[in-house]
Length: 265
Image (tube, rainbow, N blue to C red; front, side, top):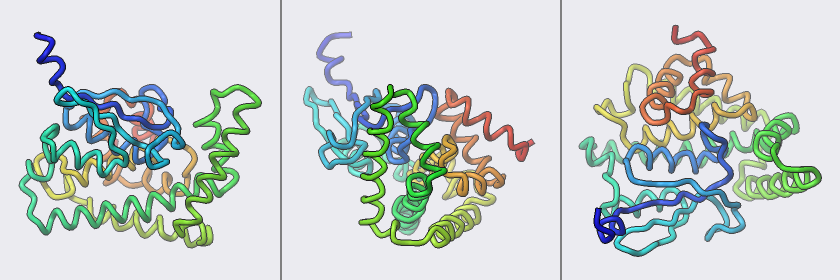
C-alpha cells in the first residue's frame, strides 16, 4: 500500500486509566468509548495515562489522526461526536434509521445512566471502606509498596471530592442505593423483550452506552450492590453476553461470571 494511503487511514489513540488485559476498563467512560470504537471498526489503540495529564483533568481523551493531522479531543461524548461529524465512523443511530423521538429517548437514557446511575455506583466504590479496599486492590494492586497506598489514597480523595461537588456524595448510603435500584428496575423493564433498545437489527448508540457501563460494573467486585441485582437479571445478562460475544470475545472472565450465575442455562 502506498505511504500516502497509509497516512490517510484514520487512527485513534484512546487515553485512559490502566486497563487490565482482556477485560473491561475500570473507567465506565473509557469502556463506553472503546465500545464505540470496536463497534465502528476504526483502527485504534489504548494508551495509559492519569487524569491529571488529560486536557480537562479527566479521562478518556483521544488523539485522532486523520488527513495527516492529529487532533486531541477530550470527553467520550465529544470524541464520539467528532468521529461521526468528520465521517470517520458511521452514526449507529442514522444507520438504524432512528426517529427524532427515539434519538431523544436515547439521549435521556444516556444522561440518566451517566449522570445518576454511574455516579451512584462510583460513590459506592470509593466512599464505602470495604468497596474501596477491593477497588484499590484491583486498580493499584500491581504497584510497589509504598507507592501503592499513597497513590490510592490520593485518587480516593480526588474522586470523593469530585462526587461530593457533583452532589452524589451528599446523599446517604441508603439514598444512593435507592437510586441504583430505581435505575436497575427501569433499565430492566425497558430492555425486557427487546434484542436491542429500539428493536433495531443491530446496536444503536444507547445499546453501546448501556453495554459499556454494564461491562464496566460487572468486571469489578467493587460495586456489589449493583452487580448483585444485574447478576440476577436474565434480561440484562442476556444483553451483556450478546454484546460481549459480538464485540469483546476476549473478555473471558466477564463471560465466565455471567455463565456462573446459571441463570441463562
